[in-house]
Image 1: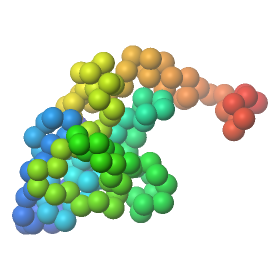
Image 2 (image 1 turned 120 degrees about the vertical axis):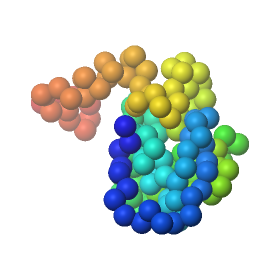
Image 3 (image 1 turned 60 degrees about the vertical axis):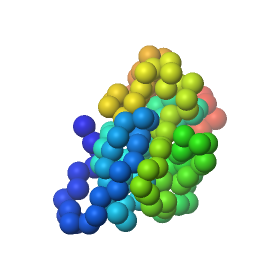
Length: 133
């Protein structure tokens, strides 16, 4: 299920592109962030924790929306417009091969990421230095 639902501006021309090998369609003038999140439930998988990410600041300041093209080009999804024929990867190729993840694979989490997510949501606060209070 997509993270974003388009409520307005349906009359713009369409743009065909790919997310992790899956054919997708966006509207001309959409940023990659919008184009991807209206198709999937995540923008990318973190290269550090293998958790789903969806962007953060939405204005190009936080570095959380960097994604790759199949050719290896790094793009900032919140400030790059979708173009016809773009082929976007939302997770590193090695991880995609491990999980079989594609645009329809939910959050694309690896089994060990589920355990990490459970730990991160624990009731105990985590201090910035890694200790617990």
